[in-house]
Length: 206
Figure 1 (spheres, rainbow, N blue to C red):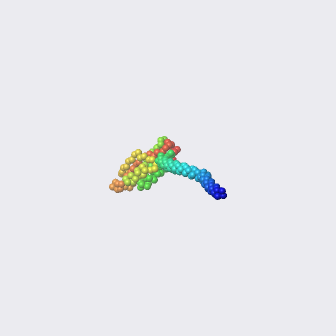
Figure 2 (figure 1 turned 60 degrees about the horizontal axis):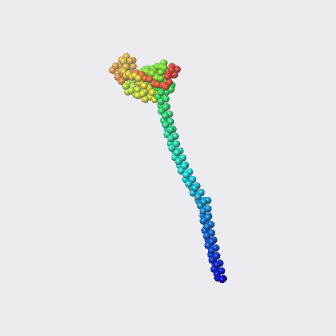
Figure 3 (figure 1 turned 60 degrees about the vertical axis):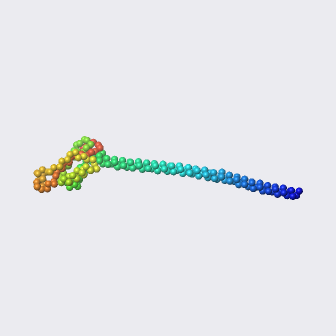
């Protein structure tokens, strides 16, 4: 009887030990579930949210770069248009600036080693043009350079008539050049016109 009780007590003790082991395993599983639910799942969810936010930020960054490129392209186009507009305003100014034009033609004659004989312009024009007539004396090369100077002037100037002749004998004598002397001396008459955006009046000429 005693032996039976001892065996029963031992069996009950073993059962209790197994029960405690099972209970311990169950507790561990519960803690693992709690850990996964409370920590790992939110962490994974947060990582996914961060990844999504990074992708959104990258899209915004790419869009910002594209917009910046468009802005730079538009800015360059505006700068080019401003440059072209300035060139147009220089070529055909709003105001005639007649005195400046005449002074520049006078200077062009001098820098090309010519002698200015006459320079006149129409002060009474009521159009968008400024007609002028220039007469200069010198060799052929200098006259050609003067013509190129006028044609390449920043202001739009059109030469409407050109004549190059050897001065008459009387003029050569007045200049101290004999008939058998310097045959390079020529006389050029250049008729042309500059342009302005507004109609020229007498008050605007100067």
